[in-house]
Image (tube, rainbow, N blue to C red; front, side, top):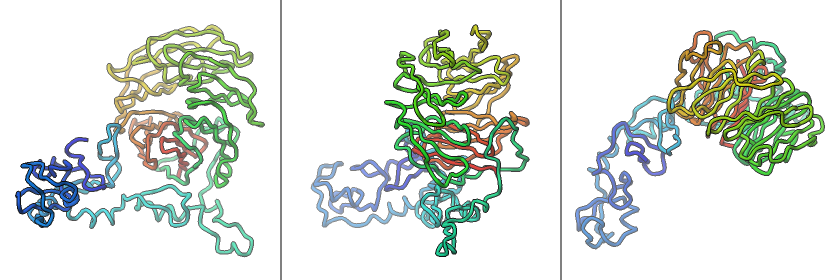
Length: 471
């Protein structure tokens, strides 16, 4: 951990300036906690540390714990150190603390941190009505309480509904269909609930026929009713022996694939397995998309094309020596794009699949997701936008402080949603190419997003699925 990220006690701490090495305990190496001075040798230690040692590590003299007193000079120096409010901190992939862009920006002294942080409006709090609700910022609590559907009805003893009716929440469409969204600026998304049940990381989600299907590292596909979210999980499918990395739908079937290298086909009505393609790839299947009657699956250095009517392999597209992490179908369904290493290739989706063009993203940027119109999210924490006609670079979207993991675009093509290892979701306006909103409700990397009507659903490393609604 870097020197400006040394924790004070067990509290996450980021210093404005790197503390002097003279303020660090020679025993534990951290900033002094309750510093005391040994009168005999004249050296200062943490109180806990001095009682855990018998000899001074500086001059090897005997440590007589009856000869230690509080070092008030050092106490004052530490209390004057400037730090950032802990409610502004987010842990990066290296384990160090970074500043979140949509959080408290207050700089305070260590001596007055509790005075500020106990009252900070960006502190995470729980809903007073139910443990089922997600954590939220203190500043959002009052607004959440107005719409929380976990409030116990005062007439429950008369046999009425136990909880506040969902009519307390503004009416919204939960049917995606082919209609464009009717979102008029200004608007925003708010977290209205959390779907819990996965026992490990959530990697993939898809919606179909009024239900959400989520899957991940526990090898289970969980089914949720989007019309009755308060019911929680309404079904489970023990789908794979390992991580499920991708889901797709075709007609009345659900398709799943992942680390066990197999492709499973499920009937959406009965949740029974219809067929399996065992050992479909030699490596982990990391991406999948459907175009008409064709299923495209990708792995290390290869994309395979399957006829969904016969479940037979039609052809294979060999790629460079890279993982093909993302596949996307163009809006006209005439082409699909695939990400490999640092490049994007575009191919026809007709009976004879063939590459029609390719282009490179910036050097050193591995692409993790892409959209059919065409945008890609990458390891360099930004989103690159390209013209689908000329393949020329248009611009970068910068706002995440972690790897961009997934992208989803609204039906009208006016709004883009991106998720990242930094635990946030960013909404962008594609007409003016500007950021609109930053959502921070997860406690881990956000790995998958899907839109369903006016709902934005996100799956994360924290094992949870958050439900956001447009207001």
